[in-house]
Length: 131
Image (tube, rainbow, N blue to C red):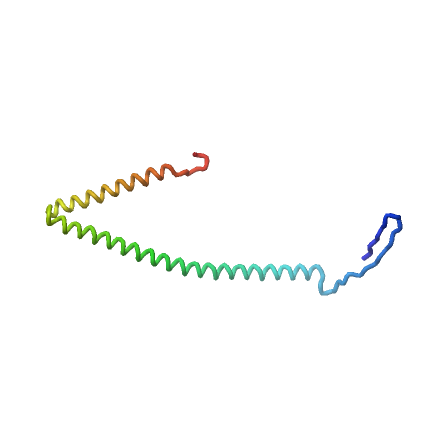
């Protein structure tokens, strides 16, 4: 490689330098090494996300299991509460009136909650332009 140095006085000086280029490190081999490095990086990233996903899946399964058990126990408790109230009220008002009272109150609570949900759903911005 030839490098020319021109100073402000107009003298030009030619300096020859040899860059160490081994025959093993040609551009083709460097590109090949780069491709191998990218391939190994991609494999490492895939393995990383595979392990991360398996850890997250195990945690997600545990959370879903706990949530399912909580839902089952909660529904069972609500049924027990309704049946207990039905037994208690049937002593005072009779079985038909107690069943009617509990069914009516459950339907009233359901109606109120549905109306609240519908009102909130209508307020949701479904499109960014509709505000």
